[in-house]
Length: 120
Image (tube, rainbow, N blue to C red; front, side):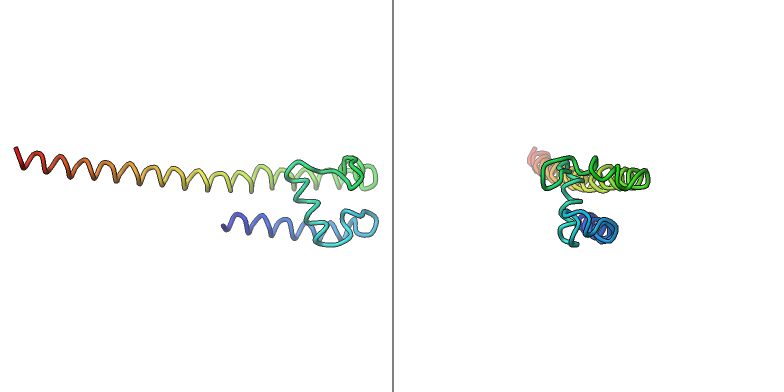
């Protein structure tokens, strides 16, 4: 659950920064909730403006190389960092549960074997 909190914190802080930088010039960033939703869409492969045009290609000529570098860094952090962290936590839980089930099965078969040996 803390990985999800980390994702929300990253999206919130980036949303506040995007609202302050792009603000009234871009309708997708006119409020913090709108900026957060736009950023979430960008991180999950739906980065288009309200009119359907690619948002990053519309912002790149206006804000230049600094925008491109910051966008690429944030995209890499969220997609390769946080999303992989969430996936790793999920897989760790699956593996731990499978191991617990396997150990319970071994314990059960050990008890049955002990009873059979004592009966023989």
